[in-house]
Length: 212
Ligand SMILES: C[S@@+](CC[C@H](N)C(=O)[O-])C[C@H]1O[C@@H](n2cnc3c(N)ncnc32)[C@H](O)[C@@H]1O
Image (cartoon, rainbow, N blue to C red; front, top):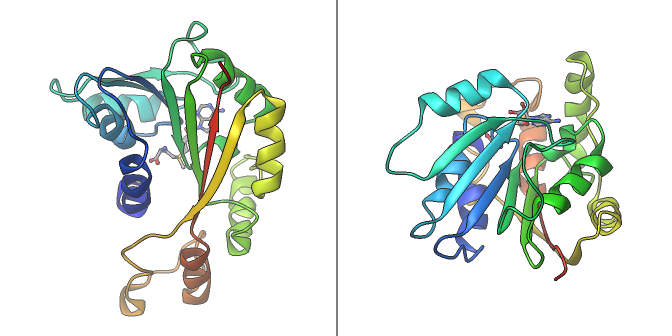
């Protein structure tokens, strides 16, 4: 994931303006590479990654560094293991569309943020990226219902959860689509044409704020 999404996440994180000492939540952290990047983004900042998969949290802990203020918890989007108003900001990469109950997940995210706190959610699987729709078949085969939403659908869901000051941006991997000679088909990118379309559509970066 870090190899595939690293460029887009670095582009987004470099624009967040993370301040010294901020406490950051990373939703659906996987092996925690973005959690660690967030925690390193300002002096004294700290980040907690949450993931439903104990295996992922085990990997994140194995990659732990004592010089980075990051830690990891097993937990579900729909029932976050934190008190309300705990975090100064939240971030999520390629994860929230897996929520079993997306409205409940966004309500939980809202609950654990401090008033005035921003959240930044990035997804590659979105309706403006038509070619990514095929991923839903893979999800179904693995027993996962993935939310294939466009920016307007996300806006409605975020506003329903209480978020305001919404902003959306498309972020394209600055490294380009890669070299067709080295392209290897898989379930997410069954052919080079699909890879090109997915690259051109880019990631959808959603920014929202919990009102004061
Ligand atoms: C595609 S991975 C992305 C991981 C990481 N953000 C990254 O960029 O490498 C999605 C992650 O979301 C987690 N996930 C899926 N549904 C979840 C849920 N309901 N609650 C918490 N985590 C969930 C999965 O276990 C998985 O690690």
